Amino acid sequence: MKHLILGLSIVMVICLSIGMYVNQGLDQPTAPQLNQPNDVQENATGPNQTAQPEQEPLRPVNRDTISYTLQNDELNITYNGGDDWIKVPIEKELLFNGEYRGDEQELIDGSYILTENRAAFLYQQSSVALTYFTDKGKTWQDSVVSESFPEMRFRKTDFLTDQFGYVIASGGRTMSQEYSTAFLTQDGGDTWGATADPPTTRLIADGGFLDATTGFLSYGTINPMEPDVYVTQDGGESWEKAVFHIPEKYHQVFVQADVPKKVDNHLSVLVNQGPNGDYKGGKVKGKFVSEDNGLTWNFSTEVQPDETKQQ
Image (tube, rainbow, N blue to C red; front, side):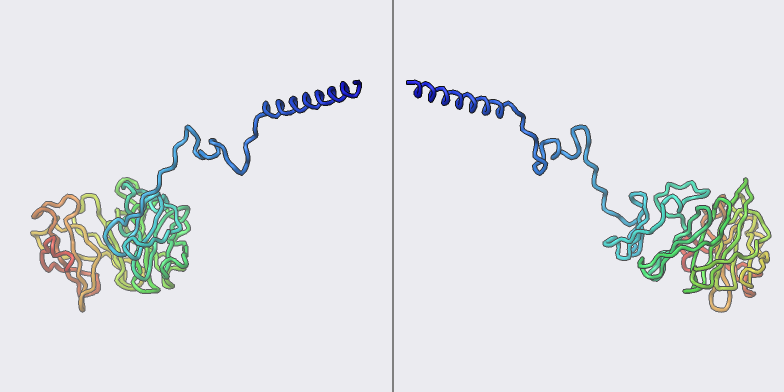
């Protein structure tokens, strides 16, 4: 009898122990497994966050095969109408530094080159510099055009050959006066040298070189009365004021010169009516011809707006 009672007691103790163990196991919370995220881990953006919108596809600013875009606050260029893009390693804001009042949706006219063989972008930071390549983006290079220059207003660059190029810039404007000059390169843009300063502080309207020795700077943007052009025939060592022989009927009509062009054995230039011209609608230009490489100019004919690109 004693053995029976002892056996029943042992069985009861074992059953009570098992019951207590199972009850403790059911009361304990289950920790989340690291390799199986819970709802919070799966929702990466969180309940109060929104997913970032996808960026729009890049679109060229025009329909040219070779073009660019400034979308997403960066400069990208394309050589196949937008199918493929090359990012230009330059901050967008540097391209517009200086005296500029545009909307920054397109590059400043004249401040860049974008052709089959060369891309170049003029900008100002602490210095005036050029970012460029000649191999469609495989190797970008930077060159300093001017270590120190006042806040730029007018800016223009171009290359006439693989080696010779120019930059024309103005800056430090106060009212109707400013500093302007030209810089030349003879080694494809690696190094630059300043020309002599032209003897004027008027606001520059345009400028350019025809070759490594002959260049022009055209002045007068505020109420010009006549063409004001300086010419160099020695690669910028000196500048001389050009003389325009204007018929009486065109006095104070044709007042602001474009950049001359070489035509056969002479030079030709179109002179526009400036910002306030009203002769025949203000768009007609006067064509002048030079037989002495730009020192003196004689009137040739009127040029209608739809004929200007042919001159």
